[in-house]
Image (cartoon, rainbow, N blue to C red; front, top):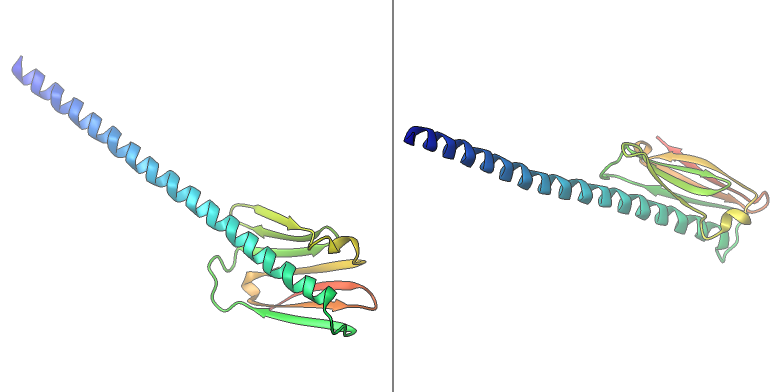
Amino acid sequence: MKAQAIIFQFVLFATTAFIIFLAIGNVFSTYSINFQRRMYELRIENFLNYLSSIMTEAVVSANKPKNFYSNFYFSNITFSSELEAFLDKNGIRVTFLPLTKSKISSINNLNYSISEMVGYFSFSQKQGFIKYNRTSNKLELIGVS
């Protein structure tokens, strides 16, 4: 009878320890996933704000040339091949592919005053141009490999 009690205590102790181990692992896993998701969202938002500021500068710049060109270059970036930016009549849409998360910006409502907005940029290209033609009122986002 004493041996059965010792075996039962051991099984109970091992089961309890395993459950505590799984619970602690689950807490850290959940924290890691939430932290990663938040980092992706911030990355999308920062890139979107960066492109929006360049495009706003292109349209409302004080020196008013006929064509405005601005280039940007990313040398070493986290998540470099997974972010894409699309420019269309609704504004800029930045998408993070593994999570298929995307965010859209109207570029400070410039999408209502610009007649044509086109373009695509992927972080695998590392370099891009923003071109604005004042005569045709056309804004372009161009990715360069």
